[in-house]
Image 1: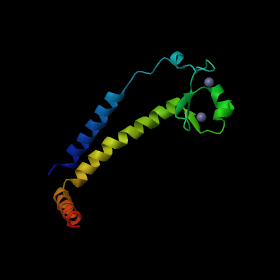
Image 2: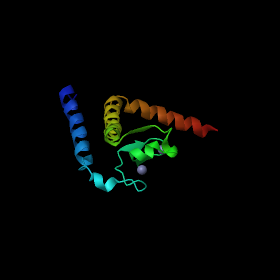
Image 3: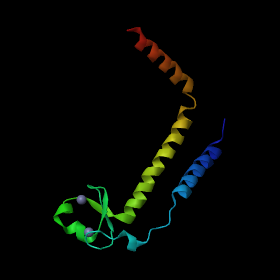
Amino acid sequence: MKSTISQKRELNDIVGAHLLKHHVPPREPSKQLCSLHQEERKLYCLQDQEAICLVCMKVKEHQNHPVCPIQERAVLTLQEELKEPLRLMKEKMKAFGHIKDVEVKMAGHIKVNRVH
Ligand SMILES: [Zn+2]
Ligand SMILES: [Zn+2]
């Protein structure tokens, strides 16, 4: 039986590796100009799933759309991405004692399906 401390360390390693893999240097802001208004794209339209500028936000097209600052969204995306490996890790830990159980249940399920 593994100690809780080593399991925690394993979890931290996964998170750390994930952060390293996804760490990209921030892009030149000047390269993110809006093609319509030549303004910096500082906002992200959640409705259209695209980066927009401050002028875009005011035009009719995006007026009633939920928008958020791009920096904030980048953080949110990272948090979302981290959820998956963490969830898998937790499931792995949880499932460790129940694998046999699940296999038996699945085998039973397949048999039931094949009857008719
Ligand atoms: Zn624009
Ligand atoms: Zn929009």
